[in-house]
Image 1 (cartoon, rainbow, N blue to C red):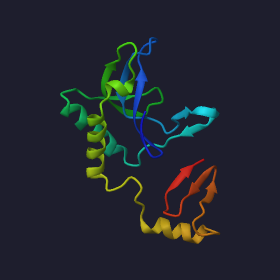
Image 2: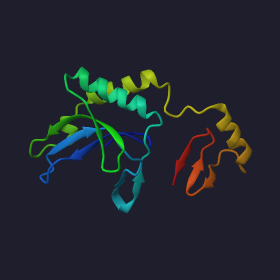
Image 3: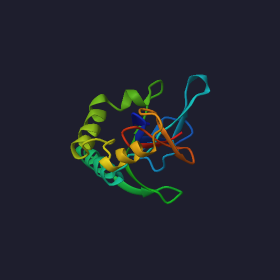
Length: 155
């Protein structure tokens, strides 16, 4: 996965049992979870602006002379398939997806989205109304929390 902060922007889906062929696409669901050392599980959310994410994926694929494809996953969630890659034995996805591609992805995304975390002032006002101690996250409901800047996340 290509992540920034707690947000996943791109998925690399294995296309065969050998684990050397991957489809590079936008994520479809926020349940992306990975297990890290010590058994810790990290969850990632989707970008708020899915329309922008799809536009960036299509643009980046076209800039690299590839044909992006609109797809639907088994849960009927839309995504953009940018391209497929095959990794030589002994190499990793990081070896095949170069830093320039990642940098360009975020240049395109950030050029249209001032920040993925900007929240209307009214959300900050809501936080102020709900918080008991300034600076502490506020529990909302069903595992949802609000940060002092008004953004929400799931724990």
